[in-house]
Image (tube, rainbow, N blue to C red; front, top):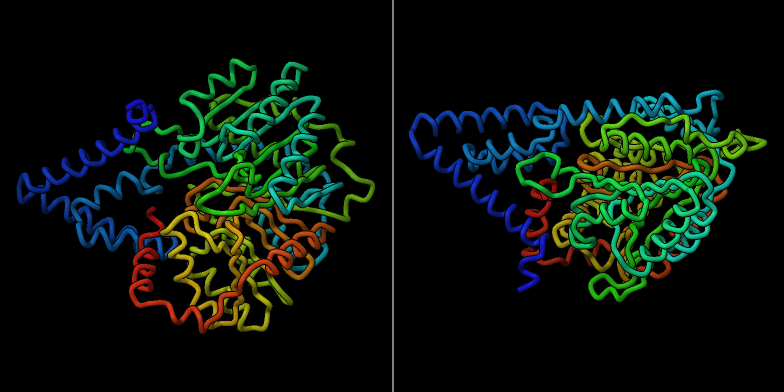
Length: 506
């Protein structure tokens, strides 16, 4: 009985009631008179024309058009409530304003050259679309497992002298978070400023209600991105999926990891088995760009102007003796603008790969453009390999992933699945000259609907570490062959195709 009346369950129950009420209201209006039915049906048809002429991905447009054409009066109203273009203008303006304020403090004193022509093009694109130029870094470290990240993260937190910024999609109480929290509280008592940000929907079951108040009582500033309040809101449909940690502006972490025990295999994972995840730590100018990204999001959520000057790190912490040797581009992808930055970055990697491109991702449900690019690269002789989970965590996304196997295998793309458990890393490495580590999954929601971030590393020594991790993981994986995949039953293939149509809406 206590479980039934938990706050989160009451909220979900109220959300379901709102949905039923909304459908019933529209249904009543439709049947109230032929005139109202005609008007709402016409509105639904108009929505179809609006969607078809829009700039969203084709699969997303198709996912809306099918239900609207089947039930124009009802689904047309649903679209008007939840379409990101219709309901997100004010939010978009506020986000862009906060981002613009942060960009005024980026170091633009020296133009850095990534070296390789393909890397130069990629760096120019990121700077043009996000405003973030390539930055130097004097050290970088790749973590092939969550356990490695965890130990190093604790060491760096203990060294903080001025401030600690932590922004993660998911935070869950347990061994990992309790230990991190104890360090944060200790540093706060030493006078270090500590800020924490997490996603409201992701932490619905992992943290108590109003956990941010507990943090504030400990002296930790805390804000929540989009806490679950109402179904009738666009903001419920977009999440803050970023994972950023910044220490004193000169050290930053980013990757696929969240702050929960399964990410470091500290608790039995009955469903997904061994959890394989990765992250990167950078020291130098690139870390400051992550700090600016954090501060801009904080400013957007709190509606309070930030004093960026007070967080600028010492110049000696940012520079190296030869700052032209290793450079990186940090990017932040906004969900409301018309530029799908992460998708374009991935396409740049795929289209400009000469010798090889290795991709490690938990899901493969992207746009047709990415699928076509992978097929074209393999057809041109590039060694294209994908590393995916053997044990899925989401049925629909897994079904969509497997529905994309056939054209890829026929084109010569090699696909591997990881039998020990679940792959959650989001890595790309190409031609020994560039790599990307990010929070971005190869699915529609990550590419178009969420706040995401990542870092492109050019000519870095750790690119070999990322490649080595892929090859090592491949040895513990099984390759999906075209012959075996063609033996999939007709019913299972049909289910996967249906899931593929609906994937962008779930």
